Length: 233
Image (cartoon, rainbow, N blue to C red; front, side, top):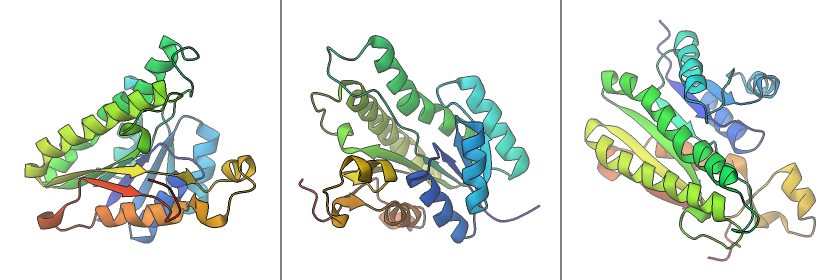
């Protein structure tokens, strides 16, 4: 049996998800990428030497099936990075109940389901790391973030509850608040006048996430906020 550790990244795209995959693969992990779009996740996985699995984190059956495939192909996960998170942006007049529920299912429910899948193996090995990727909206709800902010706040509260329960079991749960605009082709196109140091670099975020999984138990971090130095806060 291969004794390399396994990292699952739930919610994989060309920005943070791919950067997380590169960081953990470079640290000696076998990496599994999970995303809804099968061709896209397989292409991303191929680009970084990972394994790709189609999974809609909003669907309990899809989550169970995807993690069963991961365990068969790679083994029990040692690290879970929960990076899935989206939602329709708008205020109470522009957002529907379905939009609100979809945001909650992607953020909070999906994380809950993914943690359920990795916990048995972590408990058997008496340790593991779960990193939950959050946002500034988890701490302050802007007028046009009614669905996204409420979902991210639920995700943060879930992570905090998990950290308090699982810490004594040597399972480190941490929450990362990403405060700023991530450096992507689409964000650059939308903000062509912004300076380079306005954007958060995915590889730099990934370096911080990898470090969280390496912390000694006597000095674990629950919440880490990352932002460019130029970001107002």
